[in-house]
Length: 105
Image (cartoon, rainbow, N blue to C red):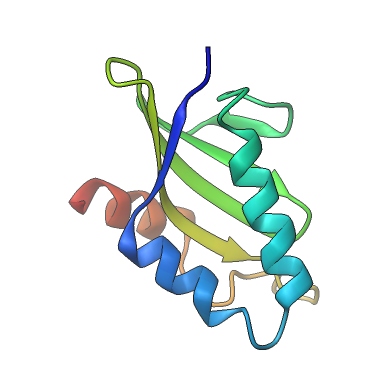
């Protein structure tokens, strides 16, 4: 049985912001999130609190919330790893900040 995948506005805006500089990367990101409809806990993902998971897909980090009752996955935040000494997300957010943002809704 498949899951419904919904993008929260902030995550969708973040992905849109990468379109100009990295259209192939955004396409790969969208394909990865589409695949969540078939497997909500794919290899490369890990639990991130009670209802959240974090998926690593290439340079992308996808934070999503699982609503088992509605069989819906909510993409709440995406980020991209910058290759270099700091290896920070492009928006500079820490993991704790990402979770806090997701919980604020």
